[in-house]
Length: 208
Figure 1 (tube, rainbow, N blue to C red):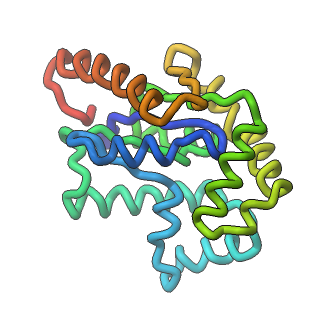
Figure 2: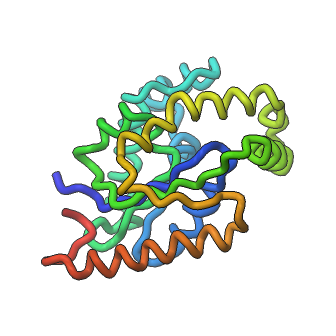
């Protein structure tokens, strides 16, 4: 199977991954897929949907095998509906892979070109961002500081090791405390340079 040319938007909860991913997804030639959107669009009447519900209703993380399977179904549907054109679109992911095991499971499907690490060492700023977002979206349980700290701890233990897994040469570190426009500007600069390099490769296609 050919691999999708892919960029990862990576960072702790509250770092702005979704904001950047949604903007990039509106740019022709880029298709954004967030793991959270995959879950929200799931038909809970299906066997796979029931499996997802079994874990989410208990507040547990969905197992990697189910997460990756759901993601692959969503991507296949996007190709079939012509929302995602893998022959000339680049894939932009956020929220997946969530850990090293998921990254290994996706190795036969995606070719990661670059990881945009939205870095925010000051945890208090992330906590404030998450509180504001929870109140704005009427998700009052998520505004609880203990819940937020648990999510950030989970990120440190589960997700952050992905940076070491992919290696420093794959990572573009970006200060997430900048304005969203400044963060986007840096991402676009890197994407533009990488796209030029890619167009220069023999037999250009967004799938190799």
